[in-house]
Length: 197
View 1: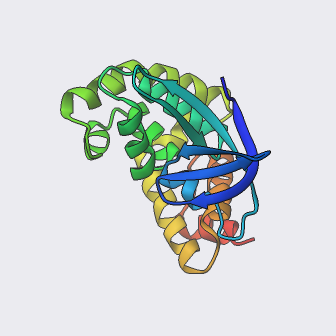
View 2 (view 1 turned 90 degrees about the vertical axis):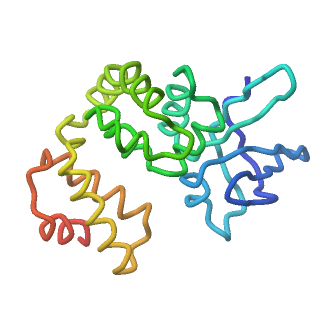
């Protein structure tokens, strides 16, 4: 099993990258989340990877964050969600948005992803809700941070911060840290002010 690749970024597109690791070029499928974190001037990259072997193919999937890889593994464990659909999910919503939708049993949000029907959305929620809730609690995040009002608050704060010129990755990190500390009991204005410090 290839756990990660650390090498030179030889090629980058929204769906895959080629990483030159000691003279060997690895083609790695990626989500838009990972693509957004790979900057144009990036020489070296490290991606957490998962090799999926099928009868007719061997495909390497790569993730900028271990958390995203873990969520991908959870998603493909659900009957009806294969690697391609899991990548569409990770490209349509952020990892936190997917977790929030599953934990709060938001079938409509999960079903809004291309390729996910009502039955598959319900199955994903039933099979992953408790697993994801345990992980969220174990990571020190209060599950109330994943309440739908906080998702809206988070989304609005991120929009404001990126409009102000803050890089999306930095804005997400700051906003999530502040929401964790406050337990979600914070106004939008206060959240933006704290994130700008």
